[in-house]
Length: 113
Image (cartoon, one colour):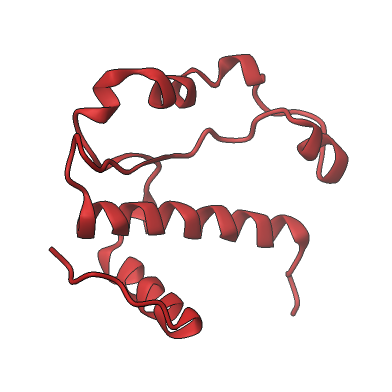
């Protein structure tokens, strides 16, 4: 339990979100019908950040990439945009996470394409 904190839990949950999005892209992405994108905006100055961890971070007004991902048609013409890296792009780690989540939830998914 040493080194465990709310901030670490939050960070790991965001990593898992991004890894699952990229795994869904690999398994099911079929632009423009079904698109998956993920991004890491970095530390953004939000009420949650200031309430729990520290003051600072980039202004919400500078989060233009996330806004573009949500609003520009070009992001619906392709799938698999990933503005992040490291473990998000590690296929073996993503597959392991997918298998663990299937086991934990008993979810059944269509076959991998």
